[in-house]
Length: 434
Ligand code: CBY
Image (cartoon, rainbow, N blue to C red):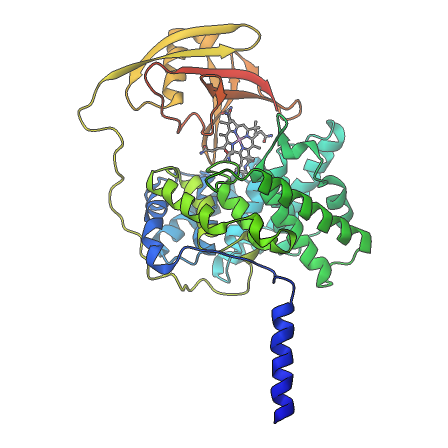
């Protein structure tokens, strides 16, 4: 009796000595769930017209946090099914990876779509095409490292084939693809930490075999990326900017063995994000979807945890109240902004738009004024419209060129479809390299 007592004490002691455990998570407490409502409203009220990629982000997010809203989920799954059936060849590698994560996030019937449509094989091919493009174009992938990380993550979680040695070769923290214009991309680094952690875990479990040196390198990479992420922590607790913080939190949750407790005050970050939510910062479905899992203590590594999607948090329902209109009814006042296109020369225009207009409205107005100088094209992305060309000059991933958005000479942290312009502002689209 006495001995067994001693044994359990020893067990307890050993348990408490296990290295700081695998995950260190802080999350919104149940009494604060109400503060997440704006995120759910945004996701619930979006239109999700045929084939929009934001539906994928939203489904993944809802599945991860186990929210019961069958109507919305059914609608999203239909959208995704349409993408899978009709336009899979046009989908990028990372979008396909997200589709797999969203469909496979819990044990439900939609998981079958992954296998019926051979999505894992197709992802292997798209990942291979990314690597081939890097080999042919000076290390530049077809898309970017955020998407390559999603690819590795989905292949790792769903037992697809990938070469650990290639992952080790391509994901060194010094790789230029982690940086845009010399600035470390927190979103990209965070997604890479999630992917590398998955790979590391499957090596440790023995699910995948490899040399000892690969495992060691992966640990070194995770440590270095975590340092870079923490280096981007701001005074108020945000990491990178408002939109990268949720993903940075996920990366830090799964990598708590690699930093000291005092290096990150999770609660402060959480509180600042909650404040930002109340100020309407996450007003697009993708922004809302990307931040939600972390706030509820979930990470992309929780996908495929063999559980069904019956929830603990099911009790917070999504209201269907009408969206709050930003512009006050009847306010037809106009504002005037300066708009310029900069290539080598700068082309100016003064543009009058209704109050509450977004950057895109300004570009459209300028285009109407002079199509040769201000003509542009765009494509849809999950974050809204992305500008692909101005004056017939096209952005290129192979050349790492893009059209950068600025206000008063400073880069914006929102796209043309969401940035609301102000009277007297100096807006610019600039031909840039990243
Ligand atoms: N997602 C992707 O493939 C995008 C990955 C991402 C790292 C992404 C940010 C992060 C995320 N969570 O999705 C990303 N942006 C990339 C890779 C890029 C590059 C795109 C080209 C390529 N190689 O794939 C590039 C050119 C460097 C880039 N982003 C440009 C821009 C500007 C777009 C301007 C335009 N031409 O329309 C812009 C507006 C920055 C600027 N000042 O010019 C920009 N990005 C922004 C603001 C953002 C954030 C959007 C935030 C918001 N609320 O709208 C972003 C979340 C994101 C999308 N970019 Co990029 C980063 C942030 O601020 N935290 C996977 C796919 C499946 O969905």
